[in-house]
Length: 611
Image: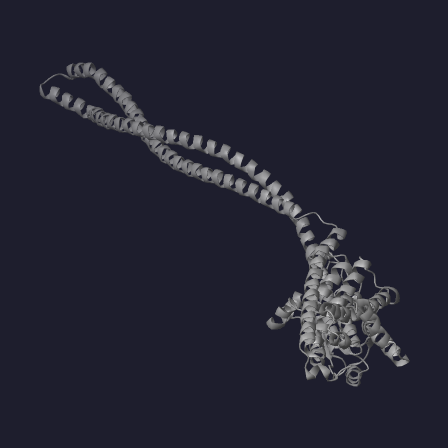
């Protein structure tokens, strides 16, 4: 018996009755129903989020607005809680329902809402607290009820995190704009300070130049007064010598004058003594008068000489007094000149210090001017529009640019490779409930084991191809999934179905109904190790190792590459692995069939528990 004949015989057996036809059609539709219904139900659950009821409680009492400019009123207030609530309701991410705290708690308990978000009374006050002396974080309260739905809790956590990021960006933008506004005002003040510093630097330079000229003048003054003091000292010494000489002359003149005056004063007595002496000598009065007459001119000259001498003595005394006065004045002049020289030297020292100090001041003023100018240059000129953009950038500095090498259009399309591959296994598994793995008549007739094996494999493989064609139609037409390589995707599904048929055939050939049960166990193992939902790297180590061995994971990967436009080389490798499973399973089945043709056991004659 040839292979087509064995296949035809099995198909006639399956369609011999109406119930057989119905059963065959039903089993062929198993993967279509499983894959189609599941993917239909999960095609785009995110689009339904706006229908998920969520309670929103806003208790925010508001807070004084942070000062942003000089025109802002001190009694301005902000209410970030209301702003957040308006944004949430307008965003329509969920079916937000504003409630009181008690209403929200009751709705969560009864399941009327999936979770609650509460904005507390101090929300705005906390957001503006950074400007005060008690900065603290604002709080958003999330309350969930896993008794309603566990995933709703995860959705609520993600929603609150997005709210937190949005509020942080909003408040950060406002704070940054206030900072930038203040910085702009600082820049304006710095510009004014630069102008003042420039004037100060110019004035300091002029003052330094004048102080240098002053220092030169005071230096000349100090040198001149020092020379004057030296000359005055020399003059004082000379004048003192002249005064001393004149005093000596005056003393001699005074003694001479005194002698002449004594002689003059003694003249009348001398005349009387001469007259008496002459009288005692017996001279006549006429003779005495003649002698006296001879002597009287001498007395007259003596008196005249005394007058001249006394006049000269008076002049000499005047000269001595004048020389003493001149010497005293010269001494005072020398003392004053010394004092003036000391003062001029002190003035010169002060002028030098002033010159050095003003030079330092000039350098410092220039550094201040340059430093302020550099500070102005480092602070960019700003406009309200620029500050708004800068504030937005500071509040949200990172923009995520998302690109995909291969892209699934929605959540359902992302799950399609996994559930389509799983549907192929389930479809083949279900077919083996009514399809005989091998023809016992052929085995009994000792036909070729290879032919028997091929016939036992091709029958479910062809029916599996029909299943995959129907599933592909449901995915592409009914559910509207798009395929980058539809022919390749269909080819992978058919190759997977054929491979799975070979695996379950081998299990049935060797183990009978136990092998059929092991097919179910193998499906469960592949369900958790294929990496169809979470990445396979998240699996425990033993299960992760099975991912690299079992065939379902390779089917999922190949479908992803062909459905989303990924790496064709990877798909080729996946198909090669499936080919190795297919050849290995068929070889193992052929060995089992060979064993059956050479060794018949009572078990072979017993009816199977399944089918």
